Image 1 (cartoon, protein in one colour):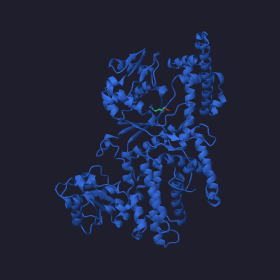
Image 2 (tube, rainbow, N blue to C red):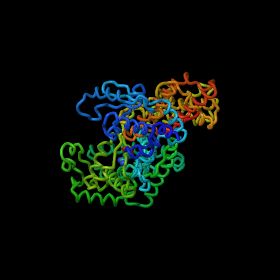
Image 3 (cartoon, helix red, strand yellow):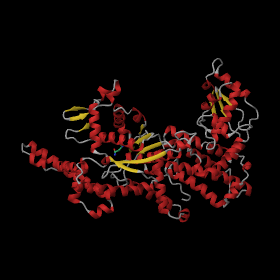
Amino acid sequence: TGIEELVKRVDGLSLDAISEKYPNCYPENNPFDVLRAHLSNILGGVTGVDTNIIYPNLQWTQGLDKGDIVLAAPSLRLKGKKPDELAKEWTDKFPENDPLFQKPVVSGYFLSFFVQPDPLIKSVIPMIRERGAEYGRNKFLGLRDPKDPSKGQKRIIVEFSSPNIAKPFHAGHLRSTIIGGFLANLYQGAGWDVIRINYLGDWGKQYGLLALAFEKYGDEEALKKDPINHLFHLYVRINTEMTAEKEELAKKKEAGEDIAELEANSLDEQARRYFKKMTDRDPAALDQWKRFRDLSIARYKETYARLNIRFDEYSGESQVSEEAMDKIGKEMEEKGIAKEDNGAMLVNFAELVPGKEGKRLEKPIVRKKDGTALYLTRDISELLGRYEKYKFDHMIYVVASAQDLHLKQLFKIIELLGHKDIAAKCQHINFGLVQGMSTRKGTVKFLDDILRDVADKMHETMKKNEDKYSQVENPEATADTLGISSVMVQDMSGKRINNYTFNMDVMTSFEGDTGPYLQYAHARVSSIRRKANLSDEELATADLTLLTETHAVNIVRLLAQWPDTVQNTLRTLEPTTVLSYLFKMTHALSSSYDHLKVVGSERELMKARMALYDAAHTVLGNGMRLLGLSPVERM
Ligand code: ARG
C-alpha cells in the first residue's frame, strides 16, 4: 500500500511498532504520523532526549517554504546550552543520507525539516487513490478505546439550526445550520457516533396566538402549499392586531375607562388561554399545533436537503414535558438553587456562585408568576432528558453568541443540581452576527428566498459564458449548488466569532477565495481528467518518478497535510481551518497548470501528472464535502 512505500524506506521501521510507541499515531491514515515517528526516532539519537518528548513537539510549519515539520529547540527543555547552539549542534549531527528527511535548515533556535520528495510522492498519491473518500478520516479517534473497537464509539450530540416556527429563519439560524452541519460531519469522520438534533422554537404563548390567527384567517390550502410562509403571514398579521389593540386599551385606560372586560377578551388573553389549553394537553389544541409543526418540519427538510443536512431528531421546546419541568423545579427549590421572588421563581446566581462569575450570571427567572415555564426552564429539562436518552459523551450547542449568557446559566444550573459530570460534557459553540442579510427586494426573508436569489445571480453569471453553459447538463441545479456554496464559503471564511457582512456581489464572484472559485478549482481538475481520457488502471500504474518539478512536489506536500488538517480542525472546531487549507491547495494547483501540462504532454508524463491531479481532486472533494458543500464536476 501507499503508506508502506514510506515505511519500507527506513530499515527497521514498521507501522505496528510506531503506532504502539507513539500516542495518537495512526500511520495507516496519516503519512505525517510516519514522518513524525521516524523523525522522533532520529532526533532521539541526536539530542539524547526521550523520543516520546520529541514526538508531540514536532510542529506544523507556517508555509511550505518553512519546511514540512519544525522543531523549536527550547521545547525539548534541555538545560545548560543556549537553544541556538543546540539547534546548530543537532543539525550537524543529523544523518547525511536519511531516506525520508533532508538535513534540517536552522534559523535561530528553529530547525526546519524538509521531506525527501521521492518517497513522499510514491506513498501519498497511491495512498489517496486507495483510501479515496476515507483519506483524512480517522475512525479510531471516536472509539472509547482506540485499541479495542469492541468497546464502542463515543457518542456526541450536535444540536444546531433550531429555528422558530412561524418566524423568519434568520442569519443566526443559517450560521448555526452551516457550522453545525460541518461539526457533525467532522465528528462523524473521526469515528464518533453522531446524533443531530434540531431543537425547534415551537412553544410558548406566541404559538397560542398563532393558533388563534389560524382560526380567524387561516387558509387550509395555503397552509399545505407553503406552511412556513403562511404561518409567518398569520403571525405577523395577528401581532400587528394585538399591538394595535394594546395601544387602544392603554388609551382608554388613560382616559379613565374601565377596561377590565375588554382586557379579559383581548387577543393577548385569548392567546394565553389557548396556550394554556396546549400545555394542559387539550387534544384539539394539541392536534392543531402538531399539524403546524409537522407541515413546517416537512418544508424545513427540503431546504436542509439542499444543504446536505439531515437530522436524527426534531426535538423542540414543545417536546419538553411539564411534569419533567415541575420535577426539576421542585428539585431546584429544595436544593436552594431557585427561590421565590414576588410569586415567580428565580435563580440568584450571585448568592450561589462566588465572585464575579456569580454576578455575571445574573438572576434568571425559571417560573413565571402564573406558573409558566420559560426558555431556560425548558433547556434544563431537555438537557437532562437528552442525557437520560442518549448517555452522550459530549454535546455541542451551536447557537449565536447573543445567547452566551443563556448557555452559561444553563450549564451552571446543571452543575449546581449536582451533575458536574454532565455539565462538563456540554459545550457552547458560538458565532458572531451577519450584517446586512436581506433579499434583493430588501425585506426580511426566509432561507429559501435567499438561496434562490443567490442561485439566480450565479445563473446569470454562468450564462455569460455561452460555450461552457451549453455543456452543463442541468444549469439550474448547478446554479443552485454554486449559490449555496457562495453563501456557505462566505460564512466559513473567518473565525466563527467574527461578525461579517452578507455581500452577494463578493460571495458570488470568481475573484478571491469564494465558493464559486473553490467549485471552479474542483471542476477544472475534473475537466482535465475528461480531456486526458485516461483509465483508472493507467493512473494507478503511472510512473510517479516523473514528478520532479517543484510545483508537483509542493502539491504532494500539501496533499500529505490533509489528515493533519482534519485532526487540527477537531481542536479548533473552526470551518476556516479546513477552508484555508483548501484555498492553499487551489492556489498551488492554479499556479501549477502552466508548468505541469497534462494534455499535450508525452504519454507517460501525462499519466503521472494526471495521477497527481486526480489525487488533488479527491482531497478537494473530501474537504468540500466535509464542509457540507456539493462539489461540481462541470460548471
Ligand atoms: N430557537 C432558538 C432561537 O432561535 C435557538 C435555540 C438554541 N438552542 C437551545 N437549546 N436553546 O433563538
